[in-house]
Image 1 (tube, rainbow, N blue to C red):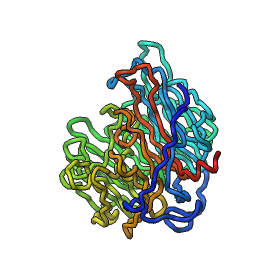
Image 2: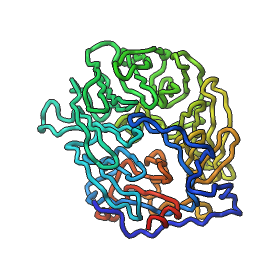
Image 3: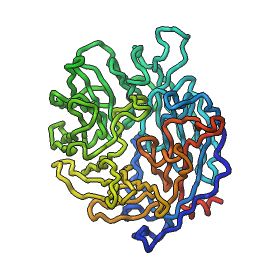
Image 4: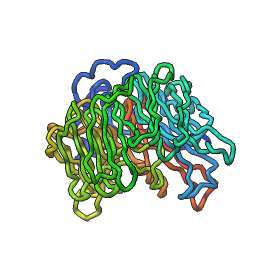
Length: 482
């Protein structure tokens, strides 16, 4: 592996006349929602940052990384790169059996640290604490042919800024925990893991076990959703008579505060949000057909139909069409805010029509609120909330307008450019950066990062290094860093 070196800066020309620059702030400290930022969070709370508008939306390449020695990889046997995180200082990427951190304070993305895990990554979480810590589950090496070969039974908690391993704990009675069924999450002060036939929670401070559930029963913890609260997805029975329950747990004891029984006939359940509690469910298939919202007491609030597959929240499967590295919380084209849910429609290619749209739904009632249209050839995808704004990625496949991260006001529909930039499109591999089905896309501290989930050698030039991630920052930020 080597750093992504000689790459020309990607500087975007802002097309005011074409409607690209709709409005913009005047300083580095202007919040993206135009309001004061929230009170500081406690260090062990799950981070909810409010982005500030860069002083200029013109984006340029701030960091990147090329990975070598991929000659033996193929589409069916790729190099997996699970886990993507960023702070104001470091961008971190998981790859196989290590995590690599890169500096974000200067052009080029110099490597800051490498954390050797002693085994391949099995599960990751998108959650990061307010002070920049997160966790992964790893698969310790076992003797060939051993009964525990392939078992994922160790949790590693680390500091993103320093790359320091803070603690490592062995999961109890986890002989059935594998890369295809292990789900990891975090909530305030607690790291929790579930693997179908068991679950365990650890104190974030020192890695000590808080509680576990490993006894055999008709109902088992299938996965957790973290963030502001801790929800458990409980699976009962066996195929074809599986039923599901959702429980809100006390993170420190594992005791259920309430239980919601999902209706019969539901074969797939994801938990894209713990607070407000939101379920993405599929009847008779793995495709999500409806969203179910609950109130604070676990009672049914609303059911939102996704209109006969008009929408695609991109829940679940992310890696080579398999369930790997944890899927319960992952819906890559759906964002849940405090009072609204934002879901992207499927992408079309009809001439003269917008590529797709995002619809906002009221959490409490399920009613549609506001539609945000993409453009012809330019699909839009919700990334996350930032205060009371929605951050959206707008892709482009032409040479006319740039790609963009924009800030949308759900109340007024007002659109504010955050960063405008061009992504490389030299080959099929590079074009994966702008596809949320293939790459992680995260916005943090004024930058946007695109990181592939799988790496495969170029068919024609298998010995060439492959671009693994890109970081885009405001050109003003880059000038001040030089």
